[in-house]
Amino acid sequence: AARPRGGGSSGPSTSRYSMDVTDTETLIERIAAREQHKEAQAQQLRRRREFEELQECTFTPQIVRNVPKAATGPIVVRGLGRHLELKELARRKVTEQREKEAKVFISDPKALANPPAGPYTVPEPFALSSYDDERTARKVAARRQMPSSEMAECTFKPQTNEGKVREMLNRILAEESTAERRR
Image (cartoon, rainbow, N blue to C red):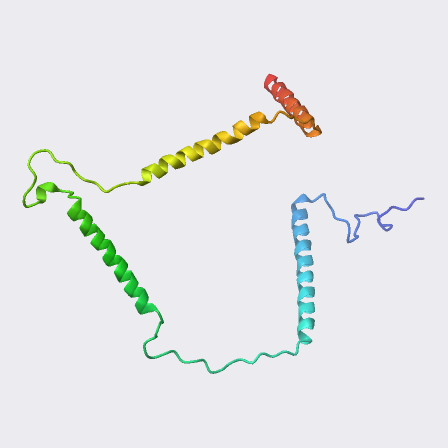
């Protein structure tokens, strides 16, 4: 008579490597419990190894017990005075520029003591950057045209496997998409 594989018993196998899969509700819970148990064992092993490594350490740091006291007087920042002076000069320069522009480029001629009679020209500051903008636009357009004109001179077209493979893949994908549309 042949022996059954489970160790000779006729009931369900009790090996630690086997599980009863007939009860699906508790199967997931048992798998999760096993995973948690394995993780806990691994973490305990890691802690034990770390503790053993730390037992061998003999270094003890010297901790400074007396912390320096905070300064009670004013804190001197070198260069702060000069920085503030430069900021004030820059602010003053901007306000002077605005005053000059307001005086030279009369924005509201009716507010003057002696307003000009009849039609008048409203002067505005120069904007010389428009020439630079046009030149930049021409450069950008020339750069866009250069690659196409250079590529027109290139006549060599190598026959590679990559091109053939790409064509074949495109053909197959096109055939599949048309077949799917027909369905």
